Length: 331
Image (cartoon, rainbow, N blue to C red):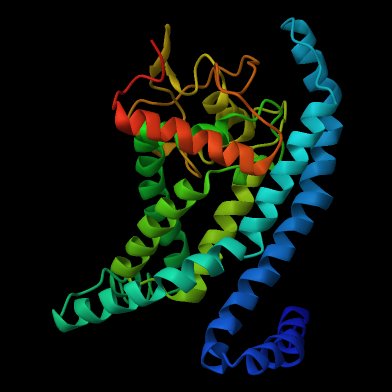
C-alpha cells in the first residue's frame, strides 16, 4: 500500500466515516470515498504549483520586469499581490474538490437518471477501450485518447465562450488578471465553471470513461494548465507545436490579440484557444506564434481584489449582454 492509499484510508476511517455517521449520511460513504480522491490529488497539485512551478516563475521574474520596462509598462505593486492571493483562493476551491463536491451534490441524480435512460434505450457508449481490443484497452493508450477527445471538446467550448457577449463577460473574469501566475488558471466565474462541468460530465457519460480515469484526466489537464499560466521566456522550440506552452497561452490573454479581432478593439475574436494541444488552433487557423511580450488583462474591465465582487461584476455584465444580446464587447 502506497503513501497515498495509506493517507486516504486513514482519513476515510478517522474523519469521513465518523462525520457521516454523526450527521446521518452514511448512505454517502461511497461518494465520500471518491471526494477524498479529489481532495488528496488536489493537495498534490497545490504542492506541485507551490514548490515547483512558482519557484521556476520566480527565477523568470527579472526577465518579466525587464520585458515590461522595455514596453513602457510599470512594474506591479501591492494591489497585484492581493489579486494573486485571490487567485490562490480560486485554486483551492477548485483543486481541493469543493466545487466538484457541490456540483456532484446537486447534479448527480440528474446524470444517474440520464445514464439509466441511455441504458434503457440500449445506447452504445463510445468506449475507447472497445475500439481496438488489445491496443486501446491498454490503460495508457486509452488515457491518451481520452485526453485528445476531451481537449477537442475543450477547444470548442473555449472558443464558443469567446463568441457570445453574455458568455464572454463571465469568461472575461479569467482574462482579467494582469499579472499571470501558476495560480491564475482557476480564476473563473462559478457559473462558467458550472456550465463547463455540465458539458464535460455529459461527454464523459457518452464516451463511458471510468470515474477514476476521468479524475486522472482532469488532474493532469489542470496541472498542465497551471504551468501554462506562468511567465517563462523559453519558447520551447518545436515542443510548442506539441503542447500548449506558457508563451502560446499568454498570447491568448494579451489585451490586443487574445480575445479581440485583429485591428478591431472591442470586437470579439482572438487566437490560441487550445487548452492542452495547439493542434486544433493549427487545424482551424486560430494559432499565433508571435511571442512578442504583451500586457495581459481585459480592456475596460474593472478588476476588484475581492472574490465576491469579481463574481458579481462578471454576472452583472453578463446579464446586460443577455438583455441586449450582441457579439461585441464594446463599440
